[in-house]
Length: 334
Image (cartoon, rainbow, N blue to C red; front, side):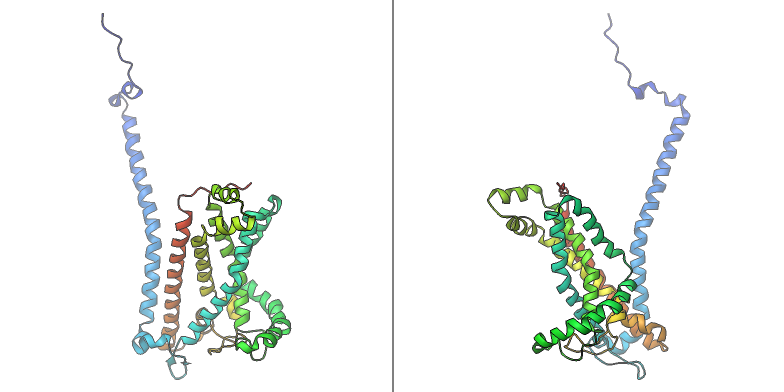
């Protein structure tokens, strides 16, 4: 007697020749999938094309001053549009000093907020505090500038700057008349704007540290501070540094709030009470006033330098954050 016949599979039960519509559906599905792939590829490549186009336009439009001044453009201090003499060093100096001052203020505050929210905050306070911190990043910069003019500048002028001049004037960083508007005001307002970025990235990389790491340190008899310092911050330091660099990228490119409080004078002064200028501010203030081709080219070259520096800083920061968060499951909050 013949043995039991194998049961045909679901695919074998279907006779493709008797179901021509099925073949049509498969072909249509493959075609739609190809269209979807090409569309998404075009979307991705369009971002790269946009960046390349920006660099190309800035490079070509700044060719006049590049050929006229070369690298000296970034190291000369004379900015005289009347005599067609341009040197961007005061703007580079103002950008670096204001951004560095912002980081000095914002890094301890941002990391402290992140540590409290991640490791020490009670559950009922954690979400509102995190939401409020991130909400600071959504406030338009012009609102920060208005707040700085009406609130921050009077406080600096009447209370903080006189005290700094009295006790720390010997350093040379806090000398001169305390007007409130100047490099110090720009650094403070930038610090407030940078805190949400540093805090958010720090919380992300701290959450990526495995919970077992914390438990192991506590099991060895460490205190909570020792556990945070050794078990968490030490393992997350590369990502935290990446968050700081991302904050630096935001500080370098900030325009409106800084323009409203920095004083906008192309001079180099050791004192933080003195007014200054940044690369973004000079473009915002003088672009509409550029009447000659060389003047316009000089401003565009400043923008090109700022664009390249910002791109490099952000790429470096993203790499540092990725080294900590890659492939690590998020820590569940208890």
